[in-house]
Length: 138
Image 1 (spheres, helix red, strand yellow):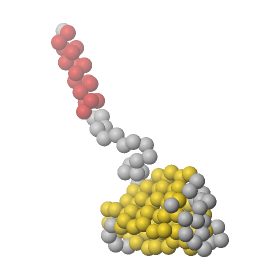
Image 2 (cartoon, one colour):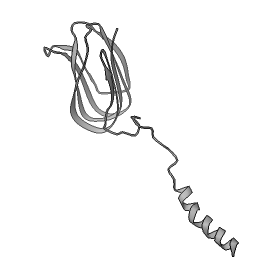
Image 3 (spheres, helix red, strand yellow):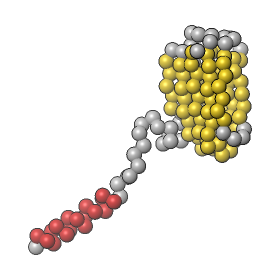
Image 4 (cartoon, one colour):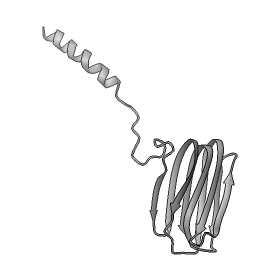
């Protein structure tokens, strides 16, 4: 009789064990957040990660900088389709940085020194790929 109860218990628990999720995605991991940017910012620093799938939208971010000597790093990887436009503006809406990306993986670094960054606009047109942007004081 005890053997039968043990067999029943194993029979009930076994499906629960094998159906458990094996891969746990940590919070704020861009791999698990499709079309939702993960952002970290503080004064004179801005970082965004995005895993996009057929994203078509415009996103505007406020930046909190006090320095005119800054650097922007843009990394696009696993680009499958679409276009990406990046614009960084000063408080008077003057462009400090502007670029468009259409094909291939990108890894670029540029200096911005003609004003204090106040806003960043990202324009996505059917964009599928991974994006990382870091703006920081030099």
